[in-house]
Amino acid sequence: MRNLEFTAAALLAAALMAAPAVAETTVLSNATVIDGTGKPAAPGSAIVMTDGKIAWVGPMAQLAAPKGSKTVNLKGKFVMPGLIDGHVHVGMMKDVTQDVKFYDRANVEADLKTYAAYGVTSVVVAGTDKDVIFDIRKDLRAGRPSMARVYTSGQGLVFKGGYGGLFGLNVPVGTPDEARKAVAEQAAKGVDLIKLWIDDERGMIPVKMPYAVTKAAIDEAHKHKLKVWAHVYYLDDAKELTRQGVDAFAHIVRDKLVDQELIDLMKTKGTWQFASTLSREIVYSMAVMPWIQDPFFTRGVTPGTLAALRSPEREKNVMLGYIRVPGLPYEKRLFGDMGRTVVQAMDNYTALVKAGVQTGMGTDSGPNGRFPGFNAHEELSMEVMAGRTPMEAIKSATSDNARWLGDTTVGSIEAGKWADLLVLDDDPLADIRNTKSISAVYIAGNSVPTIWQTCRERPSTACTGGWKDRGTTPY
Image 1 (cartoon, one colour):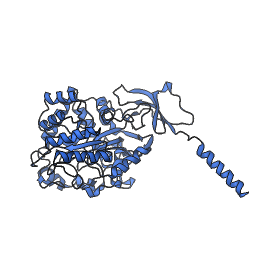
Image 2 (cartoon, rainbow, N blue to C red; image 1 turned 90 degrees about the vertical axis):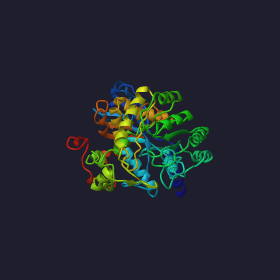
Image 3 (cartoon, rainbow, N blue to C red; image 1 turned 180 degrees about the horizontal axis):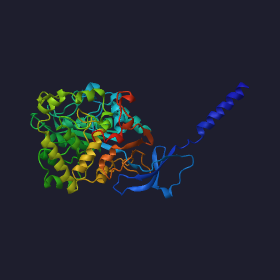
């Protein structure tokens, strides 16, 4: 009898294992779809998500909802692709203190969840990752994540005695041979991109990466079929790196107005302005941040961050003081001339866009003063301030960024792509600031907590205020 029971149980288990898995299908109905490609918005649309991917998108009149599917009625709402932030740093901060010792898996994942809450469903890390990022990336790509996807540049290249990187993490290079070796080491680890820094902090550092070293790094990366993106500040450096074949810039030129020579070089070479980082520049010119009471901001930062940002001491330091950045052997008056810099960055961004240079969206969020997820929405607003339409700004942060990354699985709302979606209460094409009206976020079809359901490192009851409260709070 026991043998019969055992045999029956074994047969049942085998049958269950052999049975095809039931597909998980959710239909988002009655929405206005902004697909991220630049096509006009499509009211009265539906999206069918099956096992985390977009199975179908089209007019409600043509919808054939699969049997057994779940339907979410989005009447009056707007759906766009999840944002891709093309320049971030993760895991390096504890409140407002930056240190390599804070970088661990838990801190990285806390940042990735914050990005997701803001509707940033993918991030590109700019050369300040520890090797644990490869395990995190592997796990994210193996299934259907509940936090932002990651593209990593591993440990980017900094010059000995020069600017860049995360102190205690990035190993400086001093010669072309060392640069080639460093690139090969990163390639062997499986990085998505190679990042390098060429800057001297407006003349405060006596050296910056020589062109012989940048060329060696670029050539070696291309041998490994890897794109190179560079931190630049000076127009002359941007020109030379473009001649050498750099694939993209991680910041706008900020020392002077871009000229026709650079524009022609970038268009001829196909060099991208991958990250605009306009919101990075404006932060440095603010003694008191105007959003310090806005729940859209306060929900996404730690209590320690809020306390530091609201302190009179910070305001004094911004206006008058010098600060010491970890790893730099000097103090600097970080905020002293940034008002001019942000204007230069805005003017140059406008010039590049008008000239038809290919551009993406990136914020340089993560370090002190630039905030995961939040800055992406500020960046979109600043792009529009600089002359882009809301549709163009959305496209820069979705399908354009995906195109430069070479990832055909994200960036737009099209059949076959991952269902990484941002659902909004209000129309972002009428006012780009409406990207803050987040109703839902989906990553690979998984609904994840939005910023309006988030209270970072505090009980949920400690945070109050929502999108509809913006009439009584800073906007």
